[in-house]
Image 1 (cartoon, rainbow, N blue to C red):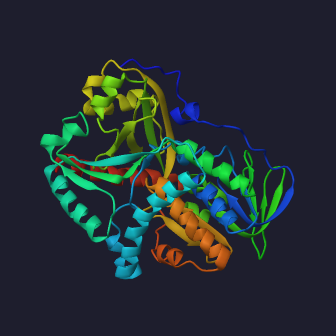
Image 2: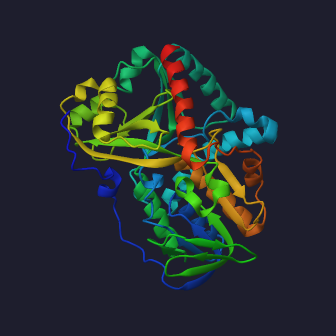
Image 3: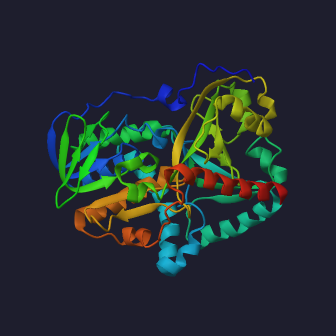
Length: 431
């Protein structure tokens, strides 16, 4: 596969419909709420707050959607993360049922937002989970039955290996579960469209304005290099990029690298053969593969989550064998874009949402562990509910789940987790 290594930028950044910059903060402002982080969490929290009539200032260290929100695979898939049934001891059976419905309703929330604000982001419905083993395919029957028991209103269907080429032109899988209530989109167009909607409702947005210091108190004061914001409440939506701004939170999230490539545009005949129904697809491996077609018929292929803190020197060369293992028919297709980004991983693969016990006017949401596209919208709604009216039952459910701080501090937590994930991958290969 010939590599065009000149294109190391994100495909999304190259194809986004609008990249008009926002100003940097160079003055002193007051607001009901200051939101730190211009990704899906921060932008949607600001939008939800503005819809409820609160004044909001949003501060982003770089550009809107610069992090994982604008670099991810664009897969809009139901679910909070890993199986939430194990959290019954913290939230009860009703809480578990709430979380399962939240994983479904969060996708519908994204769809409503796109429709309400007429956001052009290439939304396309259709997703297929791919089983790597017959045992995984058998487990899809239970998953389908559970969705039915929850009242899932979208079509689902099991696809055996003998019919799987109707979904994907690959011999790597033992079957699939199609879900027409999940799909894929252009994530950077989504978050930028939501930022424009928030600005239209009065949210004051500032880019290139990293927060250097926070003064806590009844009123929270945030300092940037050339400005200052005073607010009654603060929302931290920095996820994997929180760093030392709030160590009590950053130690509970491990920044992990994930990598994506996009091919040159494919002929219509080839694209429609690879993924005949233009679905998003994802397998079940520990280091999972996920892929889909873009609106201009490129194959976008991602995965290879790294916990070591070291990025591949050549992302395209690193991802090429993974692409060809699934689609050997792409041996002569060029890769035009290669990029990576940091996602926030939690020890229990469950998002962290709540408020700081030491500072009850400081709220946060982080650690989506690969399910951020939909769950960010849900957590933003819960944060806005709590700030605007003083209570959110959903926020109470999420915050009831305890979270561990990764051991070893900044220097050792990534290597320790990398060793742990290597063990799981070895079990996967040997089992």
